[in-house]
Image (cartoon, rainbow, N blue to C red; front, side, top):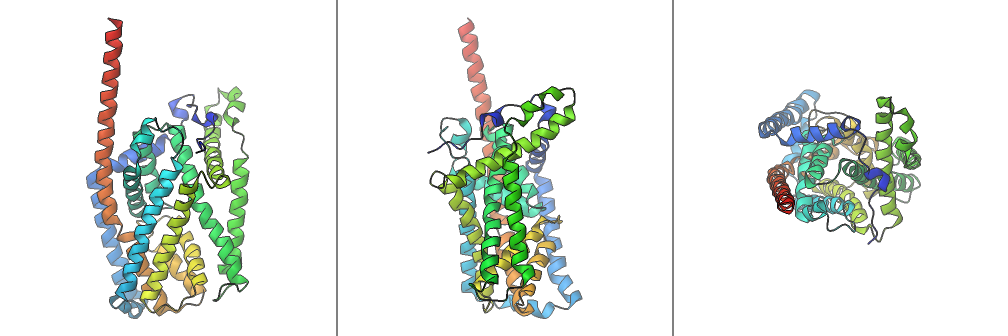
Length: 389
């Protein structure tokens, strides 16, 4: 298998700890995992917020009639949605594990991050993304923290996190382009408003161009500005783009060599297939009638709302984004509301329970890693002392 490690320049440690652009992420992850009471209190507040928005608010805005259908879905289709959800989690773990694959099997973190550890990290990270929203910031902090505790260097951890996100959202953007064009041109049936097809596809194409430009940032950017050593802010400003560019190039390397990066690519595609499958099954649970192309495009357009900061799980913002997207495609309100809320229940809120279990399992696993590190340090020091004698 080809080695997809970042270029050697990206593994070089920074000149000083203060210059490291990822220290704050690591500290955020430490705080996130270090306080059980905080996690449980956030979960309690999150549940109260859900009750307020989905029980009280509908009565205020006059859509409570649409929500009555929530009590009578086709439970067989709900079970299918749960199955798609499980599939998406395993695909997400495969993406995570695939990004970490390489030829350095002897390194500590490759041994530690087996599939079980990868599943714990991704499940806990997805739960953290739900409880601490804003484009998955909580999950990013937790995942980065776990990589660091597994023994991966700061720069490589940051690079791999960038590669992970770039590969995942490259599939997202590609889906916007492909389904937007096919729906607009009539290859897929269903309403095809300009604002829900060509405009999102065009924005996704712009994102591809930006990603390509980022990949062109020189690998030796930090060396080129070494003459500004007396200006710390200049070096700090350069270290971030250099790390991001390295991650983008790593993700592009996987795409250029699909056979060697098959696990990562399949995981990225499988995750979005699973998420769309949940929503497709939820529409069928309330009678169906929504064309497949509209389900796919409405999902990806609506998910853009997840970029907006939210108290928890995108409650309110993401729901409004998804509902608004399908109303844009002229899907009846009585179909959209129950399907989207069931999708949110199955795809986002239900996984919090196993995610929290994986979170506590991850804490125990990290403690074992730290004990192993302490034992290895003690053994090494003892050997040096014995040789000195």
